[in-house]
Length: 251
Image (cartoon, rainbow, N blue to C red):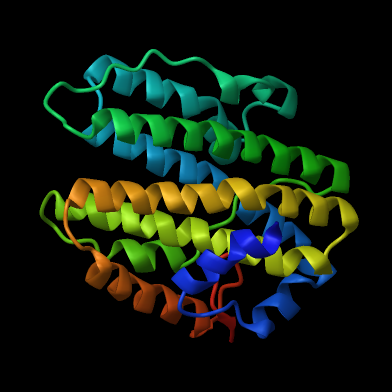
């Protein structure tokens, strides 16, 4: 099952995670960084999906509901307000979302992104639960260069900007899936099982982003995908002094 999931992802990505990163990530003293950054990555993934729906696919009332959905997670992550118990069940909140009538792809974007948001917020909760079980205290950490290094290449005009953002989403999800699979065997059994359990959803998220990009573009996007593949591979393989879940080769 794992091999079937990873085969298209390894083909999509143009560089494998360097062994030097795995060797650094498996060190017990780096577990706190890995888990805290992973938790924040789940939140950022949900925030990015919410941004796409709010900007491109829904009316103002629905946009506000989506913003409210993620607030408890943002409060815990950025203000340390709330607890594991206060987040229980919130990822499954039912949202009344009205698609914009003037957007041909709004419903498809909503359908795929709402499922992604729900899963990412649940993963946030699961990582926090794991951290509590492992005695890892939560402290906010700065974001690494990875996402910013991709986003700065987004074009400035629509609809190509949206297509670029969707392609970037595909690469982030694919890389996360690849790293979970590579790192899992080197960690404690409970973390290993958790990371393996994430592979199916991460693989589907990558496919959903890419499918949306192709559908909305209505044309061949292989050249743009190849461009971001090169950018992403460079971020993963080039020296990086800031160790994070998506960082490059440890300098």
